[in-house]
Length: 332
Length: 224
Ligand code: SF4
Image (cartoon, rainbow over all chains, first blue to last red):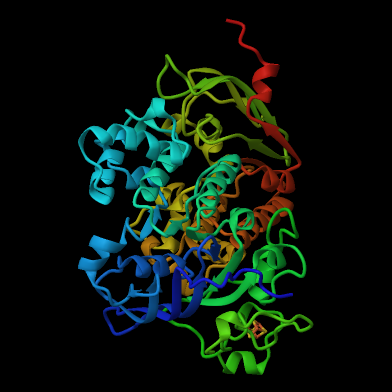
């Protein structure tokens, strides 16, 4: 099975060996993200899944240049072939990247929207700022922007607190789409939403990849990931442990990494059986594989040596019998 | 075990979010209450947990009519019900460590001598290490904090456990782990469960029966 993911176009986002460390008082560093490597192509949706605290939101913050001052990054995250997000500097990120080249669909839209201004006012302001539309053209442009995210016209004069969770999410999505950014980054966009709203939200996000946008969705909701993603990247204890074609992953032959297999098996529609134990602390990662203490396949090698990320997998004992794309492993 | 009859409740008497809702949970039974967010099911859960006084209707616990809510609830009734909410960070005092958090209900009911043994027992059950027990809420993950909140809800050995969207913020494995803890506790104690949520697949897998919000409305149409 080969990955039918990659059109021959250059990736919108190309992340190489991205690591984020937080320097803590007392000298105890936290390795929030280690050696993350993945790319997202135009028109493609990559879902980055993992439990809370696995580093996926830190990774998103790193891409947006929104890390706190005690964070240090290494590696690269090249946007559109020309801008390394890790070294670009706040001025560039604020002026040319956030909103313009990366549209952010936030985790809690209600908190992201400005509480004292109506949705219409916020859309118009974003349009002025990001597209240069002015004056008498603004009202029409705002209507169009709302329509793109299926935000109902009749609710444009409402304030954020007057919106339901679903409408607040659409308002936030409408804002994220205004700059026509080639990359949409959605950070836990479905947290706290009901199932049907989850489905509608991810379907709408998905729709925006049809026009060639890339979508990176960060979520702990596997059902949402299954519905929306072309490929899945699984993160555990700060590392990406597997990248797979979504269909292979969620259907047959299933995930290859033991953690990913455990995570899927834990779903109530599957075995509903938890993975024993808890993830290690990011400030005290073990020598070897971070999953070894919870893994049924762990042996001496696993506890002694950290498995490298090769052929889209970080495991010493990968199940065999499949050939896998070596795309992410080109320089492993 | 729990009988809610024609409960009307809310935050504005003219516009209650719960209208004439009836629901019962038999001793030892696990009932799922399924509904979309904002439908009022959490308010009903708070009524059942003795945390919110309804405007109308009756509630019985173990056959005894409930006459007071919150601090007006008699201790025997308050201690018979354990409750876990969706957002552990809103319900956990940020100033105290997890060990204290779990022990609080014991102290509040004058049973401090049971603290060391009972907390150790529950920490084992929910999978929290000694080291994690010493930490404050900000220093643990959502999943770890929710484990502590569940332990706290079980510390007085309730005969009824109410889980209001307990796992909505959690990943699949932590969800399965917490549900397994609840079920182990129920298997050995015979406690009943009211699990409130919006995830049909989860509630149907977890509970003996699942009631949809709105179904009980139809059965108990207002009579004016
Ligand atoms: S490297 Fe070893 S311990 Fe880690 S996931 Fe693979 S088999 Fe399990």
